[in-house]
Length: 127
Image (cartoon, rainbow, N blue to C red; front, side, top):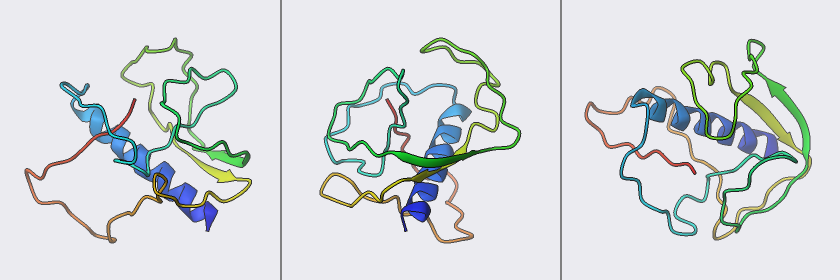
């Protein structure tokens, strides 16, 4: 179950980051309330710059399977470029499952074949 949930989270975050990249930037964003997007995750390593507001859990990673064509492009924090996100996706298997709570929920993906109507509203989330 945790593996499926992790896969859904990674895929959802990838889809959201791709949508945001279409417009190049988000303008006029609003701060989210605690629990407003309970499926949003921050994947951080030992040298990550923590820009989140707490309210989360720390879970050990059992394994990571990255895209076979992923290329590391060394960057500085806040630096972006046209090809930095190419194949930047992975499946993360957690060592222990994450339990849902009031502020932690699993991402719910649309049915297979779902096609949003033209001019539908979309929400991009991130830090």
